Image 1 (cartoon, rainbow, N blue to C red):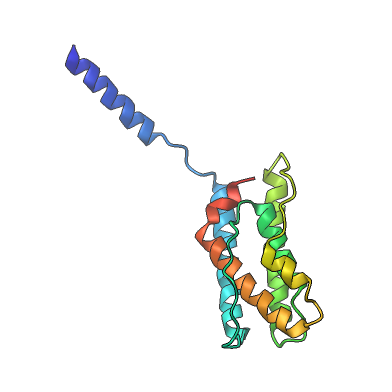
Image 2 (image 1 turned 90 degrees about the horizontal axis):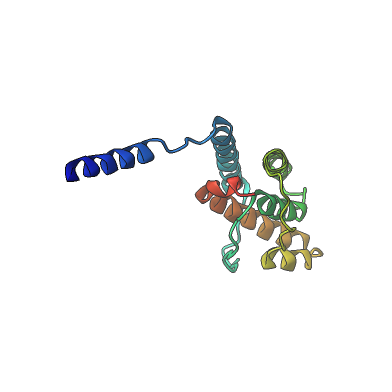
Length: 161
């Protein structure tokens, strides 16, 4: 009798482990597209961005906890980037495409709306210094690069509404 009970528990454990729900194809597709878009943006930013050696920024401490937060942060930085740098209008366009794709995903898959996330400190600070257009643009581009790195490390956050 003890062997039967042990065998039954073993079989139940095997079935519970073996029947984990796979990710829906649309989630896998969305994540791979966001990953590809973010990687392409990073390549372009690394190519186009000439960061002054004396530029020191405080590290980003915010977590990318939802698609709406990711969209808000990327759109906020994108709005601060000047079009006057060579090659940057294309980068801005691709940032807009990425945020548009994530926002479209959010609208189609997140039924309940969370409260609007608060803007991160570095973004608020940059918005208050808009008159220094080139400095703000460079810092915004560096911040976009950092956000993209965080996004690539935390693609699972895209599933969290």
